[in-house]
Image 1 (cartoon, helix red, strand yellow):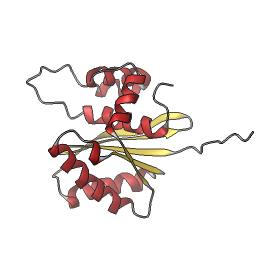
Image 2 (cartoon, rainbow, N blue to C red; image 1 turned 135 degrees about the vertical axis):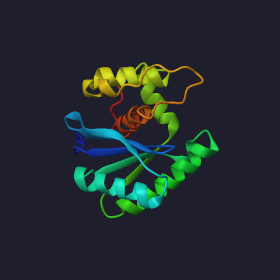
Image 3 (cartoon, rainbow, N blue to C red; image 1 turned 90 degrees about the horizontal axis):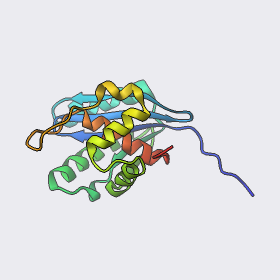
Image 4 (cartoon, one colour; image 1 turned 180 degrees about the vertical axis):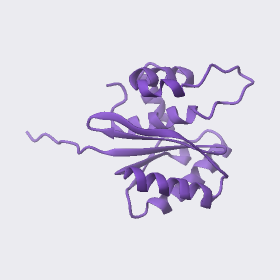
Amino acid sequence: MKVRRTLPQRILAIDPISRGFGFVVLETEPMQLVDWGTVAGQRTAESLGHAIMDLVARLQPTLAVLEDPKSARSKPRRTALNETRDLVTRVLRRHCPLHLVVARMRTGTARALGARTKPQLAERLSARFPELSAKTPPHRQPWQSEDTRTAIFDALALALTAGGDPGR
């Protein structure tokens, strides 16, 4: 019987938000975070394109991950994902492939970690990756906007989904 070994990957996961994007870079062997954060900027191809090109040049990912626009629940989210997908595709053309993750699969990753809500997901991921504990968003009230740092944890859930290791 042949055993298939997966090569270590460096996954760049991007989660677009209203004024920029959140990102993580995750190495799969051993599982560790390389970089993470949010990038604020105007929602233009030039502004976000330069930021993504800088990340790619600096971090040398072997795979890029984005949520599949077809699986988005709302039209504004679908539009943001389509724009980001087109931009990332142009930027990564010669560097690495782009993998689209269906939102339902990311939800499955969250459930595998024991999280049903975004705050629970952030807590579970902070416990697993202690370096993110300072980025854990504070509890919010229903009338408050989502903290931009939530995009870091959404991007990490995408990276874990693509890396095939939700609950290790």
